[in-house]
Length: 249
Image (cartoon, rainbow, N blue to C red; front, side, top):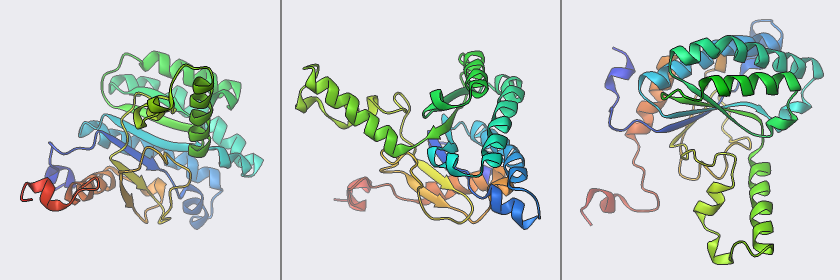
């Protein structure tokens, strides 16, 4: 029996975020170049997206390329950009067949022109889809995102457009890259690393965290279901105590 069959269909997270880690180490273990791991990791993206669609997760956000990744060897970065272009172009038909909408967050204006063109084309061609929304975090930095939001809000205050009392959690939400997207209830990281790596720092304030030793290229649908199942076993208190949640206090 698949773990999927044991899931509570009434307690599926609306938004799952994933740090896809371990491509390079997976490839190294097999005596291959790091880029081979990234290319193989595309199949894991399909697995995760299929799993999310099957259990009706509304949003799936994948940490595809951070601002810090530009510091990697040029050969690897160039290969990643080429892989991104090819993958997006090749997946549009599949996204439409599965009713998946594509969005992106991050400083995408700094991506190579060909990447930006393919992204815009894919988002335009999938914008009417009503199933799972796939959000690619590209050239993304949470610190930069928060800093940009602070600057924008400060400028609005300086210009008299808002008062200090207007600065609420909701106002900050509205100035982040993820405006209009619910915060993730579940964040998954593969490869055994136990850190957040500058990913959705504001948005995961109350997210459940799931760390798995599996390298990303080996991540399958069952691994996704396992993470959701573990999420469902946890008590999400949001600062309260158990007795308040079950009505015994």
